[in-house]
Length: 119
Image (cartoon, rainbow, N blue to C red; front, side):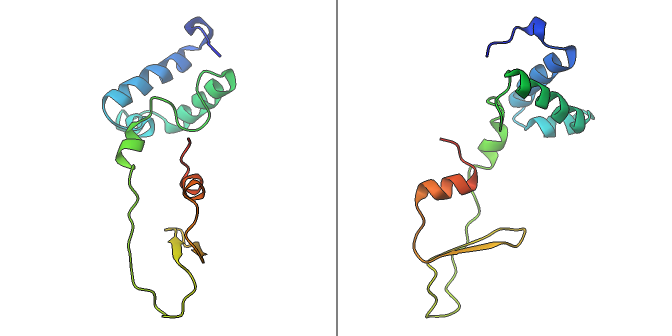
């Protein structure tokens, strides 16, 4: 959907301008808002309206590459299995505490989906 700038409110136009400025400074939009002392709540509120209008895609904004550049790699730690008879080949442990153990190597597409990659 191609929405003209006249159809956007002042807050929505500011959101788009700030998104480009954040990209230019190499930071996420939320980081930009915090650095400028702006309300992050209003950021998400305006973003939701822009998604409803079809101006901004659901998920990460197309211009929000700062986060993807800095978080392109995930920390991985390879350790010896505690038990020699362990049947898991791959173990994923999230910082929040959940663990997924796989008996064989998972498909790369499944891992990409789990990591939130979009292809």
